[in-house]
Length: 263
Ligand code: DGL
Image (cartoon, rainbow, N blue to C red; front, top):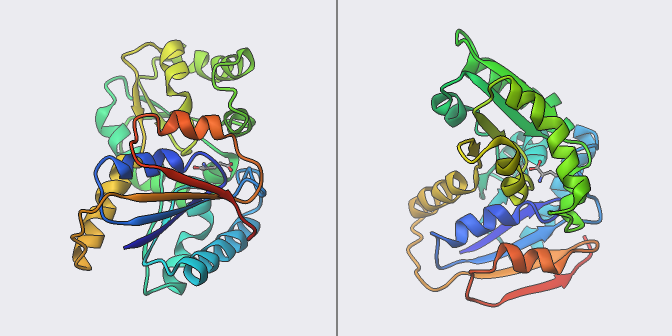
């Protein structure tokens, strides 16, 4: 099976990593669209057009059968259109894990960290409305402006990244937030800092594993039962921090091909 996965940069690799832990027998073509990153401060229309260009590239060049939009921001802007337009593909999107967060929280104070575009998007607004209606939940939404850029630069442990997170998270900590939704696929890459600030007992909700499970289910409906090792290739449209890729896949045994491409 040939699977296309994309994000604005490194973030979607947290999803590929989760897939690599339980899915086999596929070629994964990952697009890190670093030339257009970050998506989070672009308009819904700009993001949608870019998603279509990338999807066309993955279909024409790699003949994909499944498309994973490993980006909350792109999902919010384009998933409906992609599903309607590419009916022959399995299309899986990424959405902030509000539902698991609401069932995990004990304090009823839940935070959602995401990009500006995701939080403003209709899809997210509807999801929150539908899931929190009638529940006594206090939601702390934070558009983490600048955090994706820090991660792309590989500045995971820098003072600046720590200070950014500390400023956003400390007020939440004071208010008793016990569960944080990582509503951007880049953010699991700073989960250690978040734990450091909030305490180890904080619940962090990521979506990589849920996406991997969805892929297993939908591909099995199409008869996928190959168990050969997964092949991963990464194509980046702008610059990319290779050390970060090595860090993300440090326990992955097979070779990952990395090259630059134009889309
Ligand atoms: N990783 C992306 C997400 O999940 C967005 C990053 C960006 O702003 O480009 O929303």
